[in-house]
Amino acid sequence: MKICIIYHSYSGITRGVAEKLKASCGGDLVEVKPRKDYTTLTAYTLGCRRAMKREADPVHPDSIDVSSYDIIVIGTPVWAWKATPVINGAIAALEGSEEKSAVIFVTCGGKPGETIPVLKEALSAKGVRIVGEKVFVRRDADDPEKIGELASIIRSAGNTG
Ligand SMILES: Cc1cc2nc3c(=O)[nH]c(=O)nc-3n(C[C@H](O)[C@H](O)[C@H](O)COP(=O)(O)O)c2cc1C
Image (cartoon, rainbow, N blue to C red; front, top):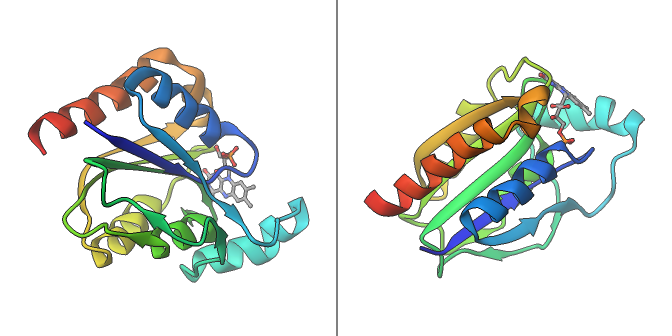
């Protein structure tokens, strides 16, 4: 089973989860970054405004070909109760995603709001089927048991998918 773990992380928490998942399930990590970095000020102003409008940032890499993978894992922090404009940009950059299965996860301070539905809608528009999801509040992001739960969702998605 080939797994592609695509994530955005502003302050490192989502990256930590993605790296632990790779250690547990294997797979290739793709960290997506905005072409223009956010500062603390612009993350809370421009970034949140763009997140609320579900806008997609121009990102590196500008194209993510997932055609050779069995499972896509998408991870994002929550900004203003939504997915970040950077992960929206990553989803827009997906190629070969039609009929792929995806597991999504978000990390947040405790208020994920509409982030999961926003991700599901954007991924469905790219022909992706969501087969699992998980929300981590910050303190869970280091908890091996919670990471293990997500890893087993990914493994079982690979077995049935
Ligand atoms: C600009 C900004 C907006 C945020 N908005 C929310 C929010 O609406 N709800 C929430 O629970 N946490 C919110 N957070 C907290 C982050 O989602 C949380 O700390 C996340 O785990 C950070 O992941 P990262 O370290 O990978 O960037 C926000 C953080 C930032 C920087």
